[in-house]
Image (tube, rainbow, N blue to C red):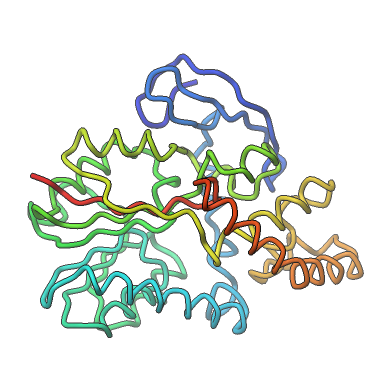
Length: 316
């Protein structure tokens, strides 16, 4: 047992749970850095299985056209927000850029130099079709870019996947210009939905999610590297309401995350499910959404929404 962030070997067990592959894990809270991590650490075989083609969606898009259109509208709104923080000719890096659409939308808002990094797979193939993006396939490594290169760096639901988050934060700090912006978006381990559902929480997503930090812990880790927290949000139309819905279904004893996998087109995982059961899960998702959207707004007021959205500025 060792912490994903600091490699410490003393930690407190929070709870045990089982992932969609029927493997058992415990969520641990490190005594040293106070981060949360999985025990045992997933093997290369487990990670390879978790990141197979079904993770990226089996079609041309990750989800069906209707859901993708909704997500695209949210990406467009986020790109508009980002563009207000950038000057013309700014250099932007999106680490874990997915299919590249978010970066592409940023590019429509001004004259920017766009760079994206994505692991090999279907998402990288989709991003590679967008000529406006300078795409690197693989992981961000030291020496990939010159020091003090970028005006903005974003990690949207990427940080929790990192096998060595400390090294990545060091690398990002070195390639960021003074006064640049760092945007982190990740599951909020201190959210009400995390605390209530515990091992059934959708956004645990083992074995892919390896590490979790609270807002205060992230603020401290980034301050050590010369970043100042300027803005924070906790609501997410895209992630938070559905996080509660799928967590609730998980807590009923329904096969873990089966509705989510069905929405991605993972027919193999949902093959053993009764069609009537899936139909009622779809109905639950549609008709309960307004309730959980409202609950997310309330949770966000108390900084307990399911998603952390943190804007940092480099001060040196």
